[in-house]
Every structure is written in structure tokens, then in C-alpha cells.
Length: 226
Image (cartoon, rainbow, N blue to C red; front, side, top):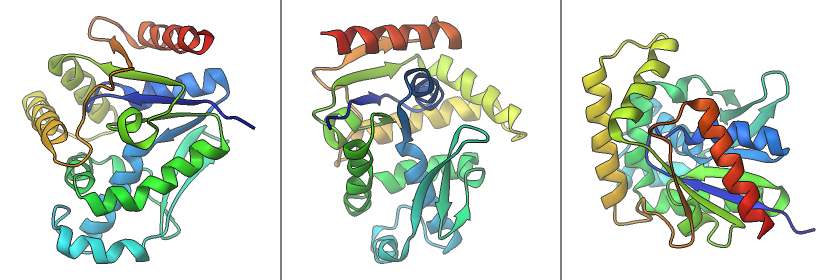
């Protein structure tokens, strides 16, 4: 059986996870949040007392990691498990989100997680989001979309999200972190953030959530019909 794969790439805070999850639900596809997988590795490093950017110390710990991705039909969300523990909430802490970018810049970490991601696409119709899905992870995806928005818009959305989770931080800090992460993701030597040549650009700066979802589904259906 041939499964359909949809790759959604874009910078931090562009709404990839929220929109990809809702689009997957609308289409009956499996949603794969690859950023959550890297956050789980970052959380493991922090718990082990390792600087997430210290490749020499982090790499030897990878083979001992038991990382699982499961879906809870009760809440409809992707849950991440680290060595048997549900760490879905912990990996969304602002500190861990920032460390994820450093972890993902390590070639050995990316290689370690690559097969896990590709295997999900081989066995399911998937919508997968991240930084290099269309360029590296699923270069032959049926649909490729580069989802973006201005840094100001992304910081506003991220700041609100953190407040809703009870995490107190100021807007300027969130904006600075987003700009820093853009630079890190775009300039890293391995699998940098960039738009695939055959992807569709979707800018949601001026769109609210419902409008963004409608635009995303329109692009997907149009691309699949070709």
C-alpha cells in the first residue's frame, strides 16, 4: 500500500504543530511532531546534567534512550515518552524548547532519529512538521509546504501560548529567543532550515488560526489533486 506523506517545514512559532495536528485530524492522517522528539532528547540531556549542545557527552547517551511517540484517543494529542515516562508537558517548557535547537544541530542526534521518523511515514498517511522534513527527512513527500509568519507575529502567538500554560515571560524575551533560534536553525551546518525548491510557501502573518487552517487544507488538497 502506498501511503501519502505531507511535509510541513518552517521557523519556530509559525504554528506548524497546531495547524499540522488539526489538518491531520481533518484528513484522518497521522500527525508527527518531530520537534517534540528533539525536545525529548534535550530534556534527557538536561536531566543527565549534560549541556544539550555538548555533542561529546550527549552522543554516548543516545543508545540508552527509549523514546516513544503515542497518541492518546482521549485528548487526541501526540504524547512523548522518555524511558517509559510521559514527558509531554515537560518538553514544552520554554527552557527545553530553546535547548531543542542546539540538540538538533548535532549530526549524530539527527541520524539517530531519522529512521524513527521515516518509519512512521512508511507505515501511515502522515502530516509531519519540523525544520527539514521536505529537504532531508521526507524529500519525496507528496506535498511540501513551508509555513511561516513574521517574527513579531510568531512572538505574539508564542507569548500568548506560554501565558496560557502558566509560564511567565515577557514579550521581548520571547521575540529575542525566536530571532536567535531562526539564526541558529538557518545557519547550522547540518540540515539547516530552508524552503525546499518544490514546496509551497504559506505565510500566515495576517491570518488567524481558522483562516490559517483553511489555507493549509486548501494547499494540501490542491497539491494532492495534481
